[in-house]
Length: 373
Image 1 (cartoon, one colour):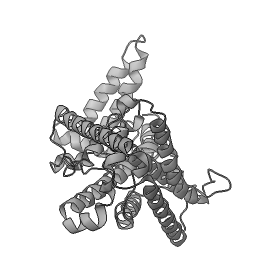
Image 2 (tube, helix red, strand yellow):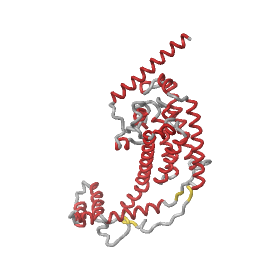
Image 3 (cartoon, rainbow, N blue to C red):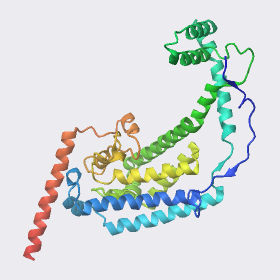
Image 4 (spheres, rainbow, N blue to C red):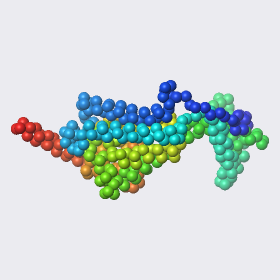
């Protein structure tokens, strides 16, 4: 069959060169440390402004009265804790970057695509053997498909190429003798794997590991009294979550869950510096959004995913604190381990309304006391 190329028949040589910086005066590595910090403050300020202007109050989970009365830590304390945490995490990131000489390089793209083309080629050559196990004569089937394709009327030319391609997949190199070059579609598949599927798999691995790390450590901090009292209870001083309080943790928890967890997920998945920028920034934005206190129907970070503001807010309530341990991307482990909140939407809304009424009554009592004073 035609369309055989020797473009990748031999592994091409390559020369590695540093990837040009996205920002000319700042390395991509330093930018990868800066972007998550910027994302935290930007998204938090957006939700602070929405709250201050009282926009979309119909989507707010908690009332302003609840925010004032139920939280056990001031906004100032939260912000000071966040600034210290971010300073230490950035310093650690700079230190690790110095030790590993972190940076992205390019120049071996054709080489890597050739490697994938070879793998696709070997997998392709296994197709006749697999069909033989099923009792199908792959060569005869491919010949019949080609014969049918070439005998099709001229009024249906668009169907010929897919059929010829199908015949080449069923029985590799039909009509090519002992040619061991790669077909055009094998190279196309190799490029698709290299540029799209492999990065997607790396992101998937990073998300799965990060979610797993967060879930099991988070759950342990709730089941182990010492860990809860000394490490995690700090975060639960916030009963009414808000954006700025998303990462209000002890330094121990921040280091264990966020710093170590994120570092390991990046190392295991093999994300590049630029992919790390995207992953880390989205993770921070997602964490802030999960604590924003608003169920916004147009918020893309809350679309099509049970792991969102409403899900995590339940965990911050006294009646939901022993459930919904999942954080950031998926609720996979909550469902596998049967720790997702079992209350119905109606029951949850009744509990929320009870909290709103109680906070309003307390606010009215405080107003009366102040007037008398």
